[in-house]
Amino acid sequence: MGPLKGIRVLDLTRVLAGPYCTMILGDLGAEVIKVEMPGSGDDSRQFGPYQKGESAYFMSLNRNKQSVTLNLKSDKGKEMLRELVKQVDVLVENFKPGTMKRLGLDYDSLKEINPGLIYAASTGFGQTGPYSERPAYDGVVQAMGGIMSITGQRGGKPTRVGPSIGDISAGMYTAIGVLSALYHRQQTGQGQMVDIAMLDCQVSMLENAIARYAVTHESPQPEGNRHPSIVPFEPFETADYPLMIAIGNDKIWTKFCKTVGREDLINDERFKTNPLRLQHYDIIRPIIADIIKQKTNKEWQDIFNQADVPNGPINTIDRVVHDEQVKARNMIVEVEHPVAGHLIMPGVPVKLSETPGEIHSPAPVLGADNEKIYSSMLNLSPEEIAQLKEDNII
Image (tube, rainbow, N blue to C red; front, side, top):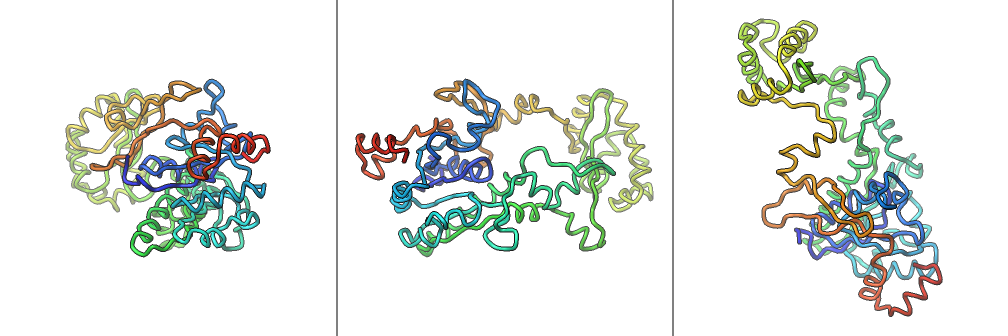
């Protein structure tokens, strides 16, 4: 099911950026065939934590996929991959630039046998430029892309964003690139290469940091949990634990002041507009802090929600998993794995009214679909498949 039903994807990716892309495609209905190295498979199969010997990290990123093993260093393995390529719509890989060319499996080679192929390459620095052949991981591109320099407490050390945003953003952009290329192919019949660099994606996500630099010619610094341009827009201590308050415009500021019983602040010349509140941050912040300390987090939530003032608790992961809104939107899904058994994982965030995505199968055991895929797509007999396994081809 799903809007991508009928699209077949050959997934040569590993760890996070590439698998995140192909997971999105699988969630939306594409048939995803994950190609892994015999014996070891995707590197992330060795990342903990484990449940009954299976990596929870791997399982969280590789649902809705089938797994075949194939040794691409062997001539037979390359031959088999080329035969598979003839029958797919999309190939996604995240090897270092030059790797697939050395194997004779790069886009220029494969488009000769499948002109409609969408070939997506997700790498640290892209296929061009002076850094193109450098290896990269999430922490490297977070550092180089500027995000660490504006994350953390004011005056503190540069801080890595908790989730692997370097990988995840690249995975999202790769999926967007693939979908765009599929639409173009639908109009013209023409395939193409999608070149995604993790560093490019980090730069694209700097939001107002580059805008501020362009105007002020000063490099933005970490601001902790406050917003650099909007006031108030940060957590405040309540009588028990912090509450995030986000006053995004002057209309909400008026609501906020009325709700907390401080109408006098509305027409105070220092605080009437957001630029003025930003200018007088050191004055208004303590005033708000004293107000918010007077009630508990839950009491303020009830008050602000009634008044339509944006707010929210700073949830720990266990609270997120059990949050009623998260559960109502099916964003925590229960999956049964053939080896690991029962586990939960995030659901599909793209909600489509007519062709909804879904999690229809857990992450595959390494090579679980060898016989099915190789017999149906390459017309290999059980005996031939057994011989390939004995020869360490699969």
